[in-house]
Image (cartoon, rainbow, N blue to C red; front, side, top):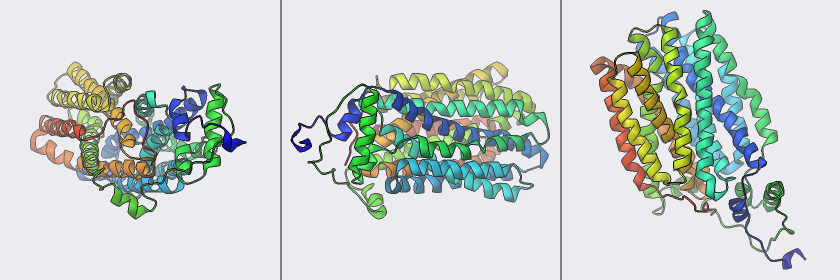
Length: 449
């Protein structure tokens, strides 16, 4: 009887047409909490570096390596995480990455020297780098078409929540005692416990399941979402086989990134990711230390950083609205241009008011750009290639985040903060131009090949 019923829509179409439900909210918040915990870890290291530089009498090179070694792990993790997500599933890899970096962060609280900290920071980066592109891919595959970009920007907005938590820990916990930085690392171990929640409470992506031929599992998940929305469907139709994936092996996926259909978008998305990572991590990892070097004490510089961080939330909110009004490319390029202007103003600011105001502008535009970037990246590749394409773009970006913290001391020595932030501004401009080589899928269904 089931085979004679008219088909309501494909699995993908049914997902695209759904209203936003409580199950969507669960996927978004479940992924978002993991995202916020990631941001808290990245944010904490910027405060911890400023403290360890004084306690351990570290050189600029040593502090630069503490920041950069995590990004080496992130580059490897992003590349491997995307490949594994296409092979093993989105949810499995998401949970595994949370576990890896949560344990490594907690263990960092026990270190007694730079060498051990560098080893653990590498493993923290390995887990963190893999988690972010997998999470954005995962949420995008559940999101209804009309609000897909907006939901990914909201997911990215959890970064501001995590960074704000890091700033609060940096302001209240780290300066409270000589071992405050150890307590900060201990708090960063929370993701290890949260990984259990992710593994058992969130569903696997139906698009990924369907692409692997696991149609019955995919249909059960989609039907549960439809039921939550009050949509009643008839028995599942299995007349049509699942669409053939463009690539089914790791080597094929990597080579397909350079197929003529995807070559230009791959080059452009890698360039945008590289530039945004370079400017963001070069600036925000070093802001507390730059303020300390400018003569502000630790508590005051951490307080400034907390205020600057709070501007991320309205940046995400505006980007989330504009991305479904203007589209992906225009929104991203405008926020990158705003980041460039703000970087120049921050680098030349003098006085507390100017530093805070221009820092908040940089935070507003830069994090809004991040939201738009995470929204557009999964959309430019088909389902069978989405994790790989997103992960490798993020991995290339992490190369810049390795270089930037090491280059900052050199630029500061050569020309101080003005030169440093002019360089960041120039990099933002390059990214704003490269955005126009991407495809804009606002209002369009995901490619489920």
